[in-house]
Image (cartoon, rainbow, N blue to C red; front, top):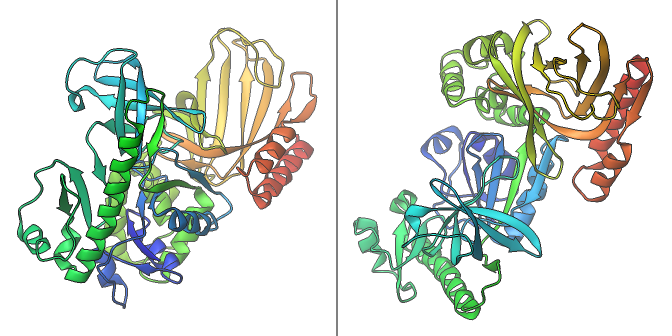
Length: 462
């Protein structure tokens, strides 16, 4: 199986996946770093870092995607994997649900499950109104943990690695395009090839194989679109590629550090730091180029001083769910940062209404939630106090190891939690939700065992 890898995890994943698969279309830094040849050949699947650097997306042939999903999920016990129901190139018939300032929210559907996409107005001819239906293709997929929708377009493309076919596009008339005219394969009528820069180094055989694969996808898309013509029900018409999403937790990032370290100088917390910020990523490259591994422990204080979080700033609590969703529990002021403990304390003023989860205590205006988060810890407490300072309860969330990025603390919630009521009663809650997540395949049993172990320790300590 041929695999193409791009993004901040490339060196580690090239080493990890290269033991089982052929890595193709390697970038110049990877070719320099590894003492081996990397062919310029069509990829069965591409592994690409997500825009927020929290994980990777996988796209390609269904069998290849399924294989890579399982291999990447095994990187660490806090790695999560989900199927992507709307991968790049998937074609849908969608109905406009509402219009916004720059585009429309479109209802899609896969196997009866509701999915929303976003259609920018500049990709549509004419005025867009609620209730309009379109044949649309996913231009840019969106991971489930982000508050974003897949970006949609009306034109048709057959995605690929070395070459992409575009319906009715003028194409690139460069040397590579002219060389393609020598190939024994012609694209389907009405489709134009757009060759990637990697094709400049490809053999004619590799280019022919890539064009043939892209042509098969284009014909499959065109056939499916023709068969669905006139059917106004929302739903997926075709998916020339399968897709999956991988979210890496803190332990998984450090496991990838160890793999990368076998290849080249890698500072402690390499991937943890790069995942925080684009500028931090560049800083890591400089440190490693000048200083090599630069120590034995993750330099929390140095990273936080340079990029955050900082006292007086704000920090969001990015609460991931095992099913792939992500929500923000709230944003608060960083009132304390302890570099020795690698911790920050965040305070949020609460509004009136409802009760605090599992505590059964009324939420009043003026209440303050004080949350202490420690880098790498499998749990964090939130203490609620009234405006007069009286303790109104403590909620301890059990989760994957916390990461304190500049703008948000991030983790995946593991459902089971421990609470302490104002009268001192300690209760463990939501074990049933954890068990349901295991049964649904969202949480692996070793991770669930760790969550139960952590919850038991907290329950005893409280």
